[in-house]
Amino acid sequence: MLMTARFLACCAVAAVAASPLQAEVRIEKNIPYLGGDRKELADLYLPAEAKPGEKRPGVVIIHGGGWVGGVRDAKREINIGTTLAENGYVGLSIDYMLQTKEGPKIWPQNVHDCKTAVRWLRAHAEKYQIDVEHIGVIGGSAGGHLAAMVGVTGAKDGLDPTGPYGEQSCAVQAVIDMYGPMADSLKRIQTLVDPKNPKAEELTRQITPLSHLDKNDPPVLILHGTADTTVDVKDSEVFAEALTKAGVVNELVIIPDAPHTFHLQPKQRDLRPVVLGFFDKYLRHPSQRPMAL
Image 1 (cartoon, rainbow, N blue to C red):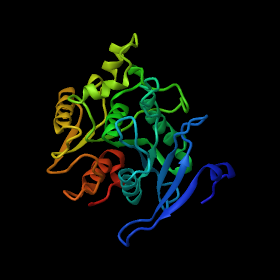
Image 2: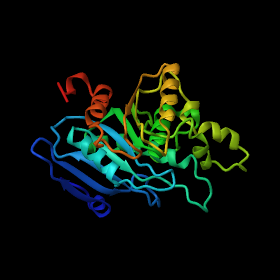
Image 3: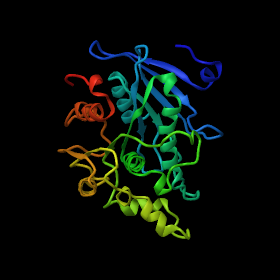
Image 4: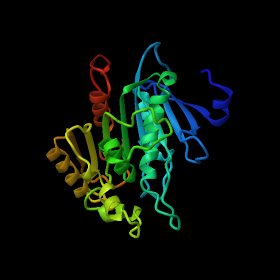
């Protein structure tokens, strides 16, 4: 693989061995996707090989952590990134600005960072053979909330950042929300807003996906476990109902006895066929879709 000296200086490249039934995965680490002096980085998960001229769908992976913690290379994010790359996707797992206990309220910078990651994939499409027309997003917990926000908001909502890569679209074509806080957890989400801010009421409305739904939103897959004691499964049920009412294609998959923070292979059920089937349906051209999972 050829890379510039500058790229080598900022990124570590690793190869992940796979079982005989899986493709090898390459990981390019520590990518400064936000540019400038931002400390948040990203890891890129790539199929080991690409055919000349082949275009692969891209997916942004957003970690959880209550908007105050979490990292791009936690167990769940590694599991998701590896699964995607093994199946022909380019996955970008990102850090984003976190809310600190003593610092000022950072909303909407966290969602701006997630949208910039979408733009980064498009800006680097030629290098990584990414299909710019088919980009998805997936996240768990707080990352599920942010993934939904990326999917259902656009320039008209005032949540697209000005830059970097401002010439690229922030739009995605498929969203997977894994047990993200929505309606019943609204008070928790609203802690990202300073109540003394003159625009607090507007920001409080802006911060939930339920305020932005319309029939032009991309398809949404929601995953939630019945044993989740952090975010009640009712949040996902309300979200699914709101999506249906707005005319948005969606599917809610409830996993009996699954707790919070599960990845794609919890002991209760292997969710890889569900997730890959959803992304294959909405992010691959018909000729690229596998015959069977």
